[in-house]
Structure formats: structure tokens, C-alpha cells
Image (cartoon, rainbow, N blue to C red; front, side, top):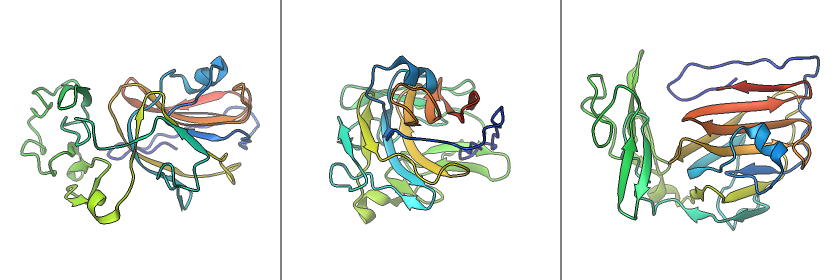
Length: 243
């Protein structure tokens, strides 16, 4: 089951008789440092994450993303703290993609139906921008709107600062940087993964865990493809994709 905030749940079912997930390699967040074509074929994108990952929760465990001090992390490369990019405060509205220009400017790529420098022009519940500065207002059939917060804020209107109250470290990924963790455990039959992130690109790897270094065998992968979330997995029968 794939759940995205503000969107309807999407379900999928594995083909064949195999119903358990067998993983053996380490878990990678942001990018997989390999030249094995099989892995990139599994993920279906060849680039890494460009943006920030605020939170990773596997089952009931909150994964410590503080690099390099976290005991959860085996190794990492190219990781910086989120906060120096001109896109960090998510100036683009309505699910638009922010691309930094230099250190202080940016451009917004709007979705169809939106316009303006920050893609803010639309006649709907978000017209007056009820969400806090730096957050994204998204129309919602039942609630009227919901606010999508940047990695450093929380609350219904994204009015609360996490950076100030928690002293957290939010890793920033540049497309080739990554964090490596031990392989997922206790996931053979059922598991939950939560990822809170801010992306500055239409494509990129969020998370990958495989059975073999070659890419053969079981795997799970979460990526961004053409601006959509894609959850792919193989239990040994065939690759399945939910997006």
C-alpha cells in the first residue's frame, strides 16, 4: 500500500505464489553507490535524491539521521545539513518543483493549472495562502486544504519550527550523496516505512534495499519519477510497481 499525504491510497498485489520478502544487502537512502545496471533497473531511475529527508521511520523505530554521529548509520558520503539551499523553505506552491539558481535565487516549475513566480495563482481554498511561509498549500476535497511542511516545520499550518525546538539534523542529498544502514529486518511478511522529504528534482532515489549486490533477487525501492512517487518491489516472482 502506498500512502501520500493529501492523496488517495494506492494498493498493489504481488504476482505468483511467493509472498515473503528476503533482503540481504544494506539499506541505502538517497542514492545507491554502484555501477550494477541491475540495481538501477530495479529502481527505474538512475539518479539520486536531490533534496532533504526530514524523517525516516521503519515500523515503530525512528531512524537517527544525524550524520556522522548516528549509531544507526554505517557510512555516508556527500551529506550536508539541509538549510543552505535557496529552495529549503519551499517557496514554490501547489506541488511545484523548486530549482535553486545560485545561492539566493530559484525558479518554480508549475503543475498544469497553476502560474506565477511561485505557482501561487489558482482560484481555490489556497488562494489566500493560509499555510505558513515556506510551506505548500494543497486543495483537499474534505478539509478544504492541507499544508505540506518543509523539513524544519510542523503543525496544521506548518507554524511550528522543529529546527529551533528539537535541534535536529536534516540531511541534504545532492544526487550522488547517500546514507547506508543495516538491511531491513522483520519485513518478510509486513512492514511500514515512512519518509518525510523535500525534493528539488523530478527524479531521484529515496530508498533501496536488495537481496544481492548484483540487483538480482528480492528488493524494495522508493523513488521519484517524473514528479510522482514510485514504490517498486520483487518477492521473487516479478517486479511490481505502485505509483
